[in-house]
Length: 356
Image (tube, rainbow, N blue to C red; front, side):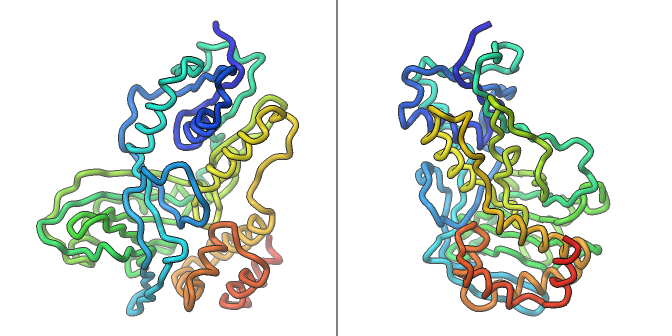
């Protein structure tokens, strides 16, 4: 079996982002890299969306960006601007194609289906596979989305809907999310914040069909793409070792209160690339402890008071959206954090603070 200087376990978003970061900065001219990924082919399977609050390597993979958005609760709509930090969606097929095309040019990079095919004894390993066994009782963000084409131009493609809570809640937290790519093409997603063992919430196809036909009042449409996934709203049990560094969700790069991960992955990749010569000795890269603490309180409230979450999200975004976007993107200062905290219902958050 062949030896490699570096091994990346998992050729998804985190693994490929790190490999691309190494490659474009010429860190693999004299070093070898094995990427362990079982899939036979790369194709469109996901969309990654975020507010562009920092630069990244994949601007040419952006499907669409928006500078306006809405947030809905029954009988109320909040219209908001985000021109300072546009909301972007990455097309996973463009992302995969761009990276694979670049990596294939370097003979020092090889793909394998299984870790058993290489000798990993003396390698630095970057692992993106999360350890999530027996975690069905924890909170997850689970979702299903369809991209549709409509017969008529029914969407305003200049504004997206971040959260629409005007839907059945079933004693959990449920909202729809709509990204209009064109006037007749959009991604529509049903999203739940709940435990994964609640099977009654997973009739995704019916939820989406009812929302499209009853809420959006669209009768004639065609589904051209479907995605389904689940994001843990807790940290996986992966642990770093001397020669093994966890990345992506496995490395704690998911913001627990939101599920946002993409830009955190890019920042982590940059950090590892800049310190690659001493990578086994550097301080662990992690989301600021401040956000970890505040997210723990927020999720405690979510679990204990799901019926209040639509109002809490609506309050959070009331007024200017800039402070909230910075907070959700790990870039807020004390005064911006305070402006959000002061919008929250005090008593239930104080009780959650003492439970945390």
